[in-house]
Amino acid sequence: MNEHEQPQNTNLITPEKPERRDFFKHSAMLFGGAAMIGLVPPGVRSAAWAGGSEGLEKTDLKLGIIPLTDCAPIVVAAEKGYFKKYGLNVTISKEASWANIRDKVAVGALDGAHMLAGMPIAATLGVGATPKPTVTGFAMDLNGNGITVSEELYERMVQADPEAMKERPTSARALKKVIDADKQAGKPAMTFAMVFPVSTHNYEIRYWMASAGIDPDQDVRLIVIPPPQMVANLMAKNIVGYCVGEPWNERAVEMGIGRTIITNYEIWNNKLEKVFGVNQAWADKYPNTHKAAIMALIEAAAWTDKPENRMEVVRIISQKSYVNAPEDVVKMSMTGTFKYAKELPPTPMPDFNVFHRYAANFPWHSQAAWYITQMLRWGQIEHPLDIRKTAAEVYRTDLYRAAAKELGVPCPTVDGKTEGSHKSGWTLEQATSPIAMGPDLFFDGVKFDPNKLMDYLKSFKVQEMKVPLKALSKLNP
Figure 1 (cartoon, rainbow, N blue to C red):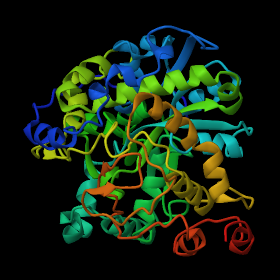
Figure 2: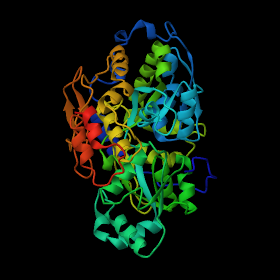
Figure 3: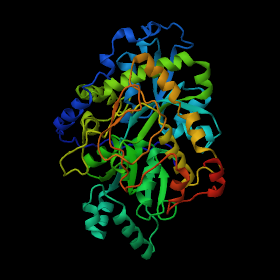
Figure 4: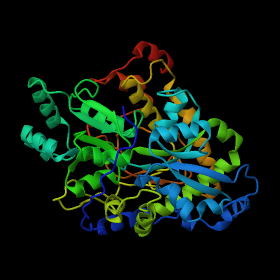
């Protein structure tokens, strides 16, 4: 699988300006409470964080990012002075691939980084690399990805099952018929791409395909390509589709070479997407520095999530040193709309990018457990393990709570929750004060109960598990 950069096509078509009114109207209601950072009285915060470096073990940090819109909390924390507010001098390093992020954090070349939600888990377990205990005390965002296919494949899917292609969310049923037709004709398997073997994108495209009976390890070829290189590879016809974060779906749409079939918000409403990851040894050596970084990131995420700030966020992250994409492309999802196809008008999708509301920054053990079930499902974990224990060791809710307490930010008092039970907004009462939450449905209607892990693992009709369920059951009663 190729993780090296390939030449990028920069011949872009400038998109039309989307309507942002629905996003601002929807979001304004969510930010009306006193939970927002900006309304917390300054006296609530500890004097130790009043812009100085008292008590910090390390003040100069180098943090890695990948050029995606959800790098925003780290970039905003640097550009708007939140890191400096807490005594930190941060340099941001734009990395070419997730493998670079993993390896540089592992060896200490980066103090911490923008990471895929599954990366700290995989690093700790040694999935795909030498084991290196890694933790997160801050989740960067919810949602933000999409599955895009070439115009040619889209037309084949419409011809194969026009009714399925009219549904929203769109299933992979039509794709299954195209794959079956190719098999009968003796054609080679089609090639799709995702960004990293333990990425949210890998599990999303697999989940979407498997729900229609497609085996992503047998029926298609699934390869790794860094996010900024997806569009060039689709244009070159090296791949027929991919799952990636923004702005790389919208860029293909605006160039007229691809159509987004489904977003990951539709696959699973408000799924944790990226995290801020550091080595366990680093966290142990620099606890005050780590706490200061998390506090700065919480404030930056809250600022980023406010609708009135989104266009400034777009201008900041679009710069060459960060995402390096046209503002008109970046703003499509960041301002609450999404275009599935070039000829279609933007669709209101106010929760496509969520950076703070819905307890978005809390590292839920339940969501970590779901990622571990997917690593087991697809054969990435080959030995029995205690799923709940591993989730708690990597997703450090205690670190988030300590920082949130300093800031006076409402925080969950439970570590996990059932996923797939709410089709609309709801209120989390098990918190320091009630928190407004968003929908959490899976598109196939399945529910995930972290207290019934074995039932969930046994339910997979398409899977490549290498660990016997009997052995897992002993550690996960």
